[in-house]
Image (cartoon, rainbow, N blue to C red; front, side):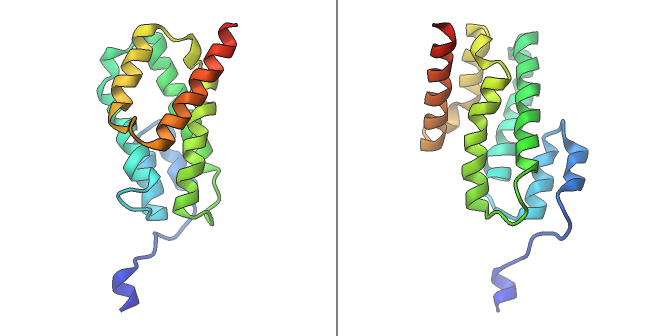
Length: 148
């Protein structure tokens, strides 16, 4: 009976997911290994927004697209370094924290108003989430510090 209610994640390490380091399929690979489900970070946020940015590519300047790629690579690198033993809940929490440093390290504060506006439009469906609001507030606070 327990076998019917719980399906274990695919066996093997996350190393093979690194074949997708510059691809939204990275999140599908992580999901296959972790089985965090529809609302977990890999499938419910990571891949969803990776694809949204890909689909809106033409809305961004060359600098904006460079930021997207740099930020995506940072998020993927940080996610790939989270221990296999970490629960899906902790993985989600850590991944949202990583958004702040990846956005800032990618150069978010220096992006044009147009690119920032397009980023907000891309992540709009998720702005109601507390974690997204907190991350956005931290990013905005750091950008203000950079300007002064």
